[in-house]
Image (tube, rainbow, N blue to C red; front, side):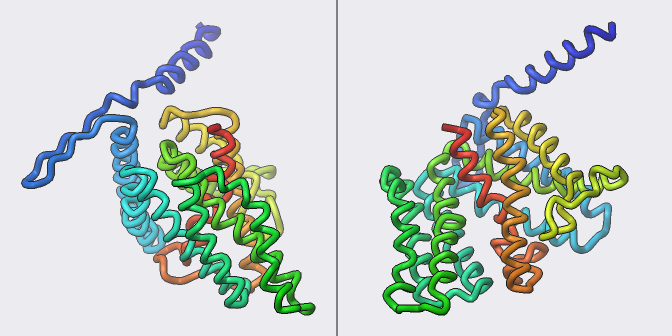
Length: 310
């Protein structure tokens, strides 16, 4: 009986993994609205609503104002991100442009980037997502454009800050502009990846809190952020595994992209914030700070997922 238990668990796991997620329907006929949709997106829609509802019950039961604020912000964010992705690659590219422009603004303020270098990043915030949509082969030029990010410093003859400006501009062009353009490249799986990254963030937080009693789990991953621990990483891996299984798209590459990319992306932004001496990259997003604070995980997850999915 004990020998059969692993096989039963494996069979149950495979049944969940291979559920038909493409045949679900969403039919809505209210006044002038006639919506009839079939496919995996409908499954994602119901999963998202279910998880939000369950999380909402837990959050309001906790009566913690910070958690309630974050939950409300999530409710507002999800349609803003989900609807353009659902409509198609063009609206997804437009979404990426908006996200990149706001993120570049926060990034430029964080590192005190001069206006001309910021203008280069604003231009690439528009160019990269549009290229990913219409001419993805043009993205092969990204390494060249990274080098050309040094032009403003070179032409100005900035001996004092030129290297720093060139490095930060080049890095920002890859970290923000190019990474967000990856969402367009993986458009069909973009919501899956974004949702998995967000859920894994929560799982990492739960892992850090839940495993803290174990000695191994309380070790910080980096001095940059003592709150990011080995326990949090373990929670991220477990959470990514569960969510990707539930969504029906899992591989070793995608699991590592979502779990490790999310944790490392958070640490990467922490390095910039530590250098700038600030707690958050912005203050306008209730419960999260700025947009960079919300999508820092995604900025590494997206390009890694693009590699894993190709």
